[in-house]
Image (tube, rainbow, N blue to C red; front, side):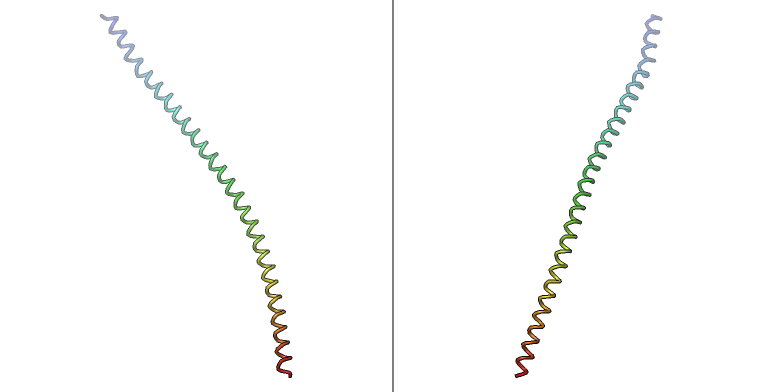
Length: 98
């Protein structure tokens, strides 16, 4: 009976050690899994950020192009209106001169 209790005693001492080893292994696995998940999320966010930066760059280019077009059109309209105003003034001078 003494041998049975020694064996039983050895098993009871080994069980917590196995449990601790298993828990440490699971903790390490969980931490590694979480780190891997965070790294994946970080890569996805970096890719998305890169896409948004490119989109902003394209939009800036479009904005500059539109500003240039608007400036040219404004100058053209101003020139046309100035010419029309000059013609109207000349017609008025001829009309009232007679």
